[in-house]
Each structure stands twice: as structure tokens, then as C-alpha cells.
Image 1 (cartoon, rainbow, N blue to C red):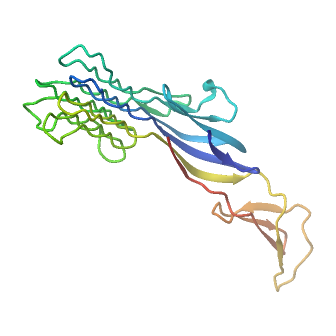
Image 2 (image 1 turned 90 degrees about the horizontal axis):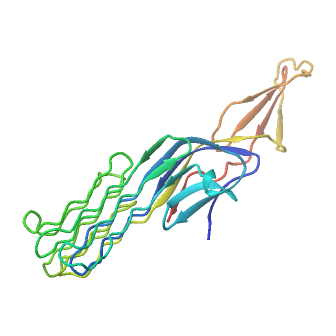
Length: 277
């Protein structure tokens, strides 16, 4: 089912688009596995959207894209790939390969960042690798599992703040299991050979921030006549239109020589939108 973002008729929206893919899950290999990859991030700083519907498209293989309704994949403004899941090969010690971080693309080229790679399984007995971090600024790889340097398995990579961090890998101690990646887009930690729990990747999201809504035209509105007390004078044949504000109630002043008409544009539609994937 598509996630629609609508720009109402008679408006042009200037928006910023941020796209976070979904983090990959850690490896479920029974002998211990690597962490899942962190998702990619893409940002379009400013794009003009004409009236109509826009589709937020999610793909399990290629992440999230934002494109005009009915458009093909090539018409995407930007795309951020999901982090890859850690795999399972069952070949024995240190066998569960970690997942790679996702990559990103933007047709407008404003900013993209790849996700961090999952950390490899390590130690003996095997400790799960940390999940890769999703990042909008710097990517972070998950740490390799280790029984000597980290009693709780490997840590997840990624920067702090709004960027998603990878989950900690599993340990062999009772009750110490792999952790999920934090959102958005952090990879999950890999399991250890002593605990079967696998960390899952954090969800992706699309954030649409409206910088401005501009009315294309004003077809109808209420007009209030305000007549000054001093000599009214004749009406000008060539009025000047001045848009004095671009707030929720845009005031349009039609200035005649001495009589002022004021018109109010209907309230602007909902602006910012957050869509979880």
C-alpha cells in the first residue's frame, strides 16, 4: 500500500526530503554471526513540488525512494538503500558473515551517506558482531565480537544523536543477547553461539519538511472594503498586488489609489510529514 504525500491544487510546495533506509538484521548463524549493515541516508535540500500526489516507495532490496506518483524508479528524487542482513553459512567457527551497509543516491546530488558495515563474529566461543550504524553525517562500522575486550559482545557503530546506531552483538553469558539497532536505520547485532536471539534492524523513515507553500493563484476569497476618512479619490485602473506574508493566513493586499481591499487566502494545508517504513 503506497504512502502518499499530497501537494494541494493551487499550491507549489518547496520541501526538504530526508530518506533513511532500514537497518539489516544480524546473522542468525548457530555458531555465532556478524551484525547487520546500517542503512544509507539521502537528503534533498530543496525541491519544488507541483500540485499532485507523491509516492513514498519502500523496497526490501533497495530501501526507500521518493518519487512522483506513477513515475518509474528513474524518476526518484532520492533513494537510500537498506542495510544488508548478516548471512548464515553454517560452516563452523566464526562462520556468520556480517551484512554490508546500504548505499544511497540522489538525482539532485545534495547529500548522501552510506551505512556502516556490520561487525564480524569473533572470539572463542563465538561472540556476535555489532550492527552497523546508519548515519546522516559519518558512517560507523560495527565492532568485531570479542570475549576479551567486551563482556557483552561487540558494540554497534554509528554516530550519536538523530542517526541510528547498530545493536550490540550477542554474548554467551546467560540472558545477554544481541540487541536491536536503534532508529532510524541502525543494523542489528549478530547472535552468539550461546544465545539464539538475533538483533533486528531499525526501521527506515522519510521526513518531508515543508520550507514554504506558495499559492499559484487565488480564485475566490472574501473582500472587505476599507475606505480611508480622507478624500477617497478615484480608483486606479492598474492595481498593485502585494503579498505581505507567507504564514498560515497569507494576506494579499490589492492597493488602489486610496481604497484598500484585503483578501485572505484559505489556511495552508498540513506541512511536515514523517513516514515510518
